[in-house]
Length: 224
Image 1 (spheres, rainbow, N blue to C red):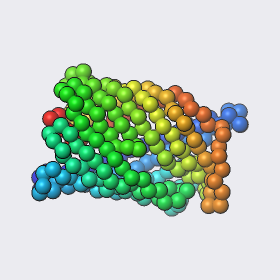
Image 2 (cartoon, rainbow, N blue to C red):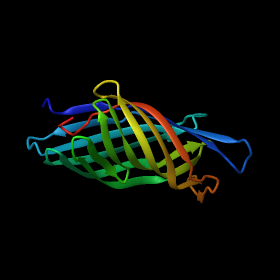
Image 3 (tube, rainbow, N blue to C red):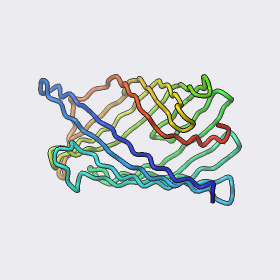
């Protein structure tokens, strides 16, 4: 069906961590991924389902090995309650280095009026967006992440973090977006471990966040 959508969304992320316990020492961890998503429109137009496969490489990139890769995915059902309101629910999985990681998903896509949208999928993210013009949007965003990164061959770092951010989105094209974000982390918690241990890492504290990015975005709200 022509209403079905297939999306490739490659990404690259990098953490540069300053270790306060060792003066001047930093640890760089990176992630490269290629999420593949198929969005299926069913005969009942009130329902869509998204199927995602998410392979990624999370490591310090010093000596890349097979155990540095992770494989995950998600299934997300989207119910169109009315023209300006969609509900979403599903399940996410990833093969984290600390073990299998499952999390239920619950989301919303609500066009409150011609200028204000509320959308996101919890516990991952929730965004309140204001439309300044057809190409400029801004607002406030909450994001929660749980990731793990391989370093020194066998060890890993588990990152659990929550961000509150202000953002601006500028649409170069209908689906090509430049994003600028500024915010602060809340309840940040890092742990180190390997196959036998899982220890807290007290060197990391809450801090400021600045981010810029370029993305390909599909807006599910049919009025945009």
